[in-house]
Image (tube, rainbow over all chains, first blue to last red; front, side, top):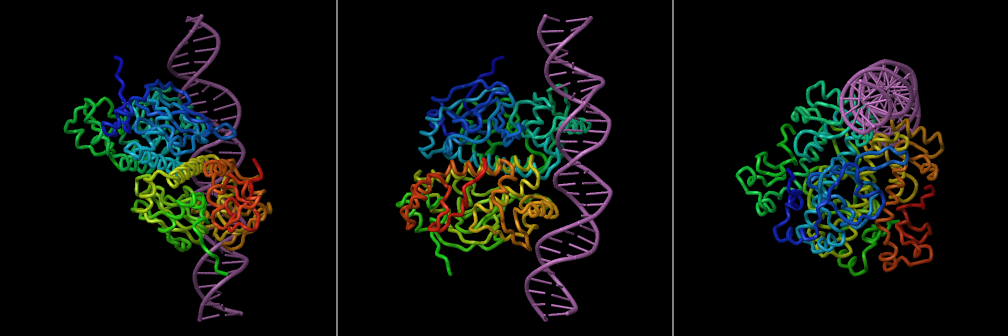
Length: 279
Length: 279
DNA sequence: GAATGTGTGTACGATACCGCACAGATCCGT
DNA sequence: ACGGATCTGTGCGGTATCGTACACACATTC
């Protein structure tokens, strides 16, 4: 069971028109992204962008005292390294693989060439960046106003949306680093969710039992971010999917939204894994 | 004493090469931006971008329960309405004038035309957007990790950098809304700063007495954001200033950085008002 | 100079999270 | 089976901020 890899497992790449994807694909290189690997460090010059397919990457900021906070999370809906096309070349934050998997590496040289064409790729990258902007803004909001319980729900949902299945491999210690809180705080919050029957925790594995329950318990921040991603990057199923070997069946063709169907034939219908229930 | 207004009072516009600024200026419209005016509301379609000259604008997010948080602050170093060229047209946040003044309005139609040219204006707008990204990220960090005292210092400094002079007109109530805390909390924090001799407070007027002291007392977030703005938008003095009636004197010509000189001839050397002392 | 409104200072219990310390539980290599 | 490492649970005092309530200071108007 060695799963095949395709560029269109990343939604941004999948959203490209056929000819653009073909041109771009020539320079994409499939890379493994092991847990903990840093795709770039604070202030270091970035040489390439990464389009995750099965990996999840956190954008982290590390403070002078060593503590850290997650600024945003990127999975197969996005790209790591926006500063390359935004023009800054570096950022003060780091990008660390939070969940091991694969992704496509695209050299900065080719990226910039493609970007200056002003075509669909530029358009997609900029819209994605706006979505990222929203995610960061909402992280700021959430950090200020919401309880750790709520933030943990939000974080679980954001991760879940970028994964296959309902299990995440992640210690409480790591989650604490992401959320910028104590490990004990996460233990307590996770305990609350577990008693409520929403998740099942065991030594670095979190099984989500009741996604709808999580959505009910989280703050508005999750929905705001998700809605904005859906709004800004809606064209995926229309433009990309049907051309590359995923047959357009009824459930998929009606998409017009990043929201994927849950039917079995889709190699990755993970982001988002399900329609949002509440709002 | 009616001060004259020029597009190049905004640093982004000032950074444009002569011919570009000339072309762009034709469609710029000077507008007054009174305190409290909303340049756009959450989710509403934006029709134009604004380049503040003397006004300061806050990007605010308002929660379902009515409380609000400032996501970022924009003055004469930037532009309001990035979603217009990023492609989203709207954002979940609002833009509210925090300090009355003037700015230039640029219709979305002309903006998009100019943007697609891929020239200096596109370049500048994207780099500015990256700086904005950093500011938002750092706001998230700060909200998580730093004390209200520190955050107030950061906020005062960010505002001060975008103003002429050392006095801000702003009630504690409003500051509390920006920082997303109670008004009483601001009273206490401001009291601390006042006892320390750093500021003087009186009924909606804050006079900054010791800027260096504020910088010493604030968290690293301020310096990170400022440094990133300086790094991303350094070319102002080189490209823009010398052509438009500000003579390039020794102190200004060596700039190569947004950091303006403090000599008297500069119409607005307010952002940043002074070299940062610490770090 | 009295009345009203707006802005600021203070007080006090409640609470969420912190920092630390340590115990129990599970996993892994030998 | 054992020992060590890693992960999770719990307890406790400390602290920053919250929510609420209210008194005071200053400005404007009549």
